[in-house]
Image (cartoon, rainbow over all chains, first blue to last red; front, side, top):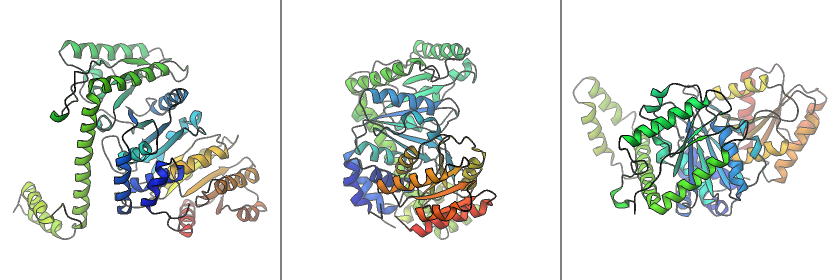
Length: 339
Length: 138
């Protein structure tokens, strides 16, 4: 395929043309201005897919589980796209994207599309442009879009503000029950999957998670409603949802159908309660603010040697505080306009 | 890191029964350190799987290392599949242990570059960059 302008790729994406999908995803990832209007157009055609986020620590078995889950979704006849994220080097900016190594089982299935992405300096577990790539796959007609985050630590929770359903994968042997009651990653789970349950110490991990959940309920925390924050999009009724803990073993093939059942049940519960609209509003809010940040960062970079440098000098000499300088910078840059 | 910069995307694959992946991992790392996004498929892929993956990943270059002697089967098949799928803007770069007599044949078949054993890292990086530059923007 020789050069095709992004505007012309859109129609082909909507037809499900693989090369067009892949090319527009590349342009979304690199953030080129040329693709901006095409991606705006794609966004208007997206919104039908069920977006499922899968997150967990490095080596917890995310890719392996995503592969098994994808095979299970395919058996129900639905088409699946996977956005698999791995880290960029903080030094060279390059990356080794290895999630496909585990995905042999679904290779060659025309109903599966796998796209690897590098974080490119984004923190929070996702990659720059990842949600625009999700839009492209959604608009192309994939029924389920799975976002597999980079291996996360304790605090990278962006995926919960990008997905309808978030699955947190825990592996046995990675810490005690205090880890399980800490704030952060475990709190964002709609579903807990414990991987590698062929191992003897898996029962301990399952028990710790279940205890943690029981404690939270006992203390009066109500799951499902805690993430609703948009007043205009309040749920019709409260979502009755307690995150299940599902034991899986990719080696033995256990638990994957149960995981899919839980994911489908969660989506149905979101729809029936009206919580889905609230989550969509939350995703929209996060994306708009993230886009605003990106625009600002770009504008600042354009003025790095000019006004930004002057203000930095003034800050270093303590003539002006960082906060006051930032306010001045924003006033001067007329941020809403085009550069 | 500049998010708007065009980054070269390369898929690195091992095809067939050849299980020697030390060299290919070093190549993957070398290209990473040169600032490229490298998708590594792992071992025992078929040419069909590699081409399908290359299309989904929208790579600039497919790099396949072969130490098993199957190069005269695998490389022509990769080139043929790319043509059949309208994806011959994706370039094929070969590596591994390949007899000198086969090099002109592979080039004539459409393999853009062949990097033999003992190729220094900077030569590998330069070759990938050259192949992408010669293809031009897309």
